[in-house]
Image (cartoon, rainbow, N blue to C red; front, side, top):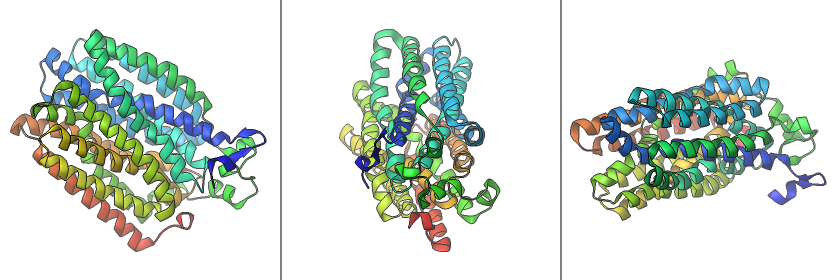
Length: 415
């Protein structure tokens, strides 16, 4: 089935507009968050702080935006995703504007950490959860397209932030980024709708009487899902993986600077992660629909471990660029495939709430990983240990998912 086949007499299937809205939410939300590496040096210089303490700013935001899915997921299932996504974009914009006026590192923690953390947390899970309900046959592709906003945001926003910092300082840069989030993210969030049945449609634009529509109405209760071995395995896998998953977004630029890479080229490495991430979300999201989404999850976790090994031995800009693209591709695949695996395992009835609970595992890993890597650098003046630990963690995470598949087999909806 192609996108063209979802064009009906009423126009383009609205599910693609929901995908476009979720794409924009992830583009401006995570794009703003992943500019942090460009701000690390000026913040460290202005506040006279260590890398570990500055990295904690990002860790707090990451913890909150993944942990808040525990609340925003069930609220989206009950109240609808649109209002939460709009509120989230407003919170991100306010947080960035408040960070621009911070006079101490504590105020940066509060403004950036709470603004980005609470804002992305309000918007992300509801937006991505809504996409899952609008598709069955093309779910992996649609999910990958929606979260490719993270990759495009990582590609576009850091160099924009770098230019803004160079021209108007980090405070002015935060104000401009906040305005972009408010106008673009807030406006597009209005297109989000929870379920195709509200428009008299089934998933993929099929008539609602088709069996595919029942896939969204049924599924496990939250209690049944979280007590299952599949959920336990996914939770452990995500927790272990996420300890290292976000370290490159905070520390790749300072790592490159430590190895003699010019500041302008170092920031562009984040763009390479974004390019790889975008490619991974498109290609690996679509591939997962064919080879099995849980098997694809194992593949991308192993790929992330492989990329970390490249980083551990990289010492010049070209090797770092190779790492950035490979890591970005598999990281993008991980983000794209994971929500679809949840939908396959547990159905659509409570998908946003289940995804929200699952993402608390990522929250704890994000809180610890980037800041721990920064403090490890402060002690050893080297990133090798946290990088290798991250590689090992991804291998363990892949083995956990393989154990789930060996014990339970693929779900029917994934077959």
